[in-house]
Amino acid sequence: MESVYERVLAARLAALGYLVSRQHPVDICFEGQVFPAAFRIDLLVDNRLVVEVKSVEKLVPVHGKQLLTYLRLIEQPVGLLINFGGETLKEGVRRIVNRYRPSASPRLRVNQNTE
Image 1 (cartoon, rainbow, N blue to C red):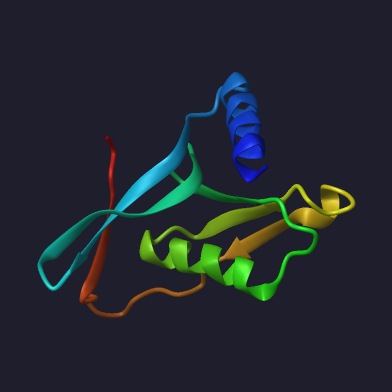
Image 2 (image 1 turned 135 degrees about the vertical axis):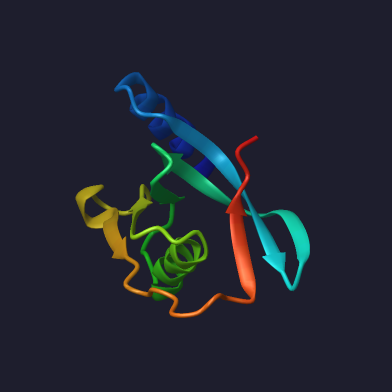
């Protein structure tokens, strides 16, 4: 069901005028070797808001950690974790903030694939 919710949410955001990329591929470069589309972001809105879509009975800490990892890798400050499987949608929306700022050049680099 997550893919259905993702499609509908993407269509609704696009209808409201937002630029939405579904299953946005992200390349990872580690020690000079590039891994194309190493992971995919459910929704990338206006090239700055990461949205992770879930459809589970209850969110667990690993869901937030997954989104936080994405935010850290692509150096974005904030993302939304949206769970459509709970009793109410209001209970299923979490704002995840990336407070980590690397102080040195990391060995692992991530580039958003714009194709």
